[in-house]
Length: 352
Ligand code: KG4
Ligand code: ZN
Image (tube, rainbow, N blue to C red; front, side, top):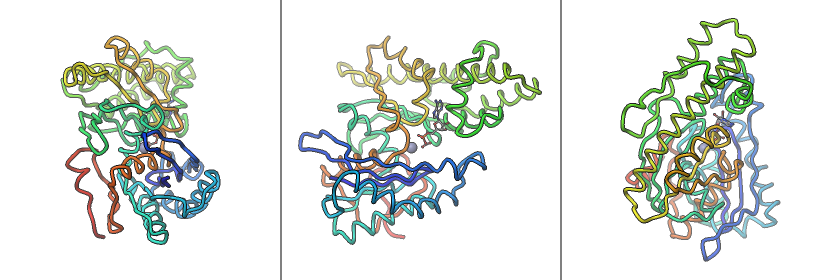
């Protein structure tokens, strides 16, 4: 029975998850407080405000998670918390709280890489077996990761500039659609003509499994400036054309990554797990389904509330590590950057 704490961005979250002997997980509680209102006026997450809100709310969120799970803190076997990557002020709040709880309860601490939380969620929700390919597409990350086992990851590629969710947010901002931008762009795109504008598809001619969305965003901005003042139809057409372009790019790269997986693991089932807030986008989901159907791969998308940031994914990653008796010293440090790769996963930094 693991308590999981997540504070690396703008969600203050705590959850209790149980993992049984056979490796089956159950969510006993999953409390998430989004800070959207705190940051709305600024058009993005303000790190200092986020950290302060985590300080103010985390104790209540943990108490609520314990309450909903119907257990006392002393019933918990270990405390897991995100130790990075993320906004360092927020990470420090969650990790320090977890250390204090672990010390006072005399229970182990498990420091979790936030990306590992996303990577292992599909095992909690869908019981997915290793190995599988994960595509993480959120506001902060866009990457393909081969997941061979707990702690055994290989990054196959990712964005060299903006994350995909970030590109959606920036396009929404320049079209005055508000924050967070992804859902707003998707909604308005339904009224738009996705063929009206032809936007660039950066990097696509190159073999590597990388993305670049910053040039595309600039092309969208130049188009919007050229047409200004924009009619409602112009806005919808730009949103639809942008969304179609990124859906094409993501689908194209996913096919390439699945082919690489199929070659490397011939005979194994091919599985693609999607995580991160952008997984909510239906046009992108369709673009991912197409290559999966063609290559006979399973596409696994956990429920969207568990694709976006939450405490259950951290508690579950903690439970998987706890089962392997992999716990951490209270001296472990928070890390603003922490790539999900073997060598980095093994080197957890200790000290101040
Ligand atoms: O995973 P997440 O909740 O937070 C982190 O970034 O960690 O992802 C949020 C991102 C935002 O950039 C948001 O605009 C994007 O996911 N997003 C979407 C959609 N829903 C959320 N992007 C495109 N279409 C959507 N329907
Ligand atoms: Zn995340």
